[in-house]
Image (cartoon, rainbow, N blue to C red; front, side, top):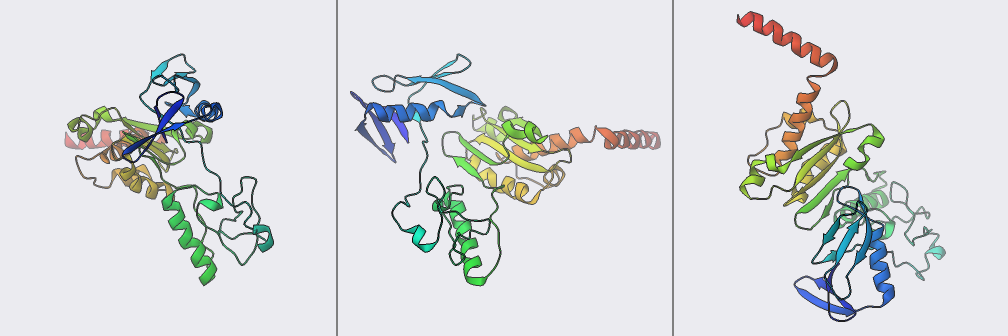
Length: 289
């Protein structure tokens, strides 16, 4: 939902190519402001206050004191499953406190003869997860398989400009798991330079052995970069494997390769590998002489 200043006490909602002005109550404004206050923006800075929504251009005050003027305010206030009054309890299907159907990792409900998939199951509410989970639920129910849901490598895209794409553990959470973050700023990326879109970045979340556990990409078409990253997170691929794979040039995907190369290069200088590398270089230089 894009909140756009409207006339009087209303604000506009941009749907597709049209703009509709909706007259709202104070309660609606309260919901919008609360949603913004409870979300973090710009790398973990919290929203301190939101003002000017009714009759002026909106502005956001962050907790570090900086003020961000805006033309529109994007608010995602969430959704609830509309399961009330459908009689799930009569079928022996339990719901959680948010009205979602309770399922196990095989998508089986509390009624062993019923499986559930999609938004109503309380799992990540994306079209792509609904499709994959629908296949899992159907094959488990019809064929008696025991396929499990993978919630660790679900790609997520916010279709703003630039796009924000993410999968797995996020950079802000890396330290909690003992992982490191490798960042490639897009002002070093030739495709971004060619398109004058250098304000983005690519970040990989990696453990000490170079295995990938998450990624964050901010760039044009960031969502299209997530295919490789999701595959890497799901299968525990390493930066060595990514760095050893030829990537097309110049593309925005090249940032993933650059980040992988940077991590491999750093690890070659550390520990036993670093000592061995120096030894090999010394031996090689003597032979060349």
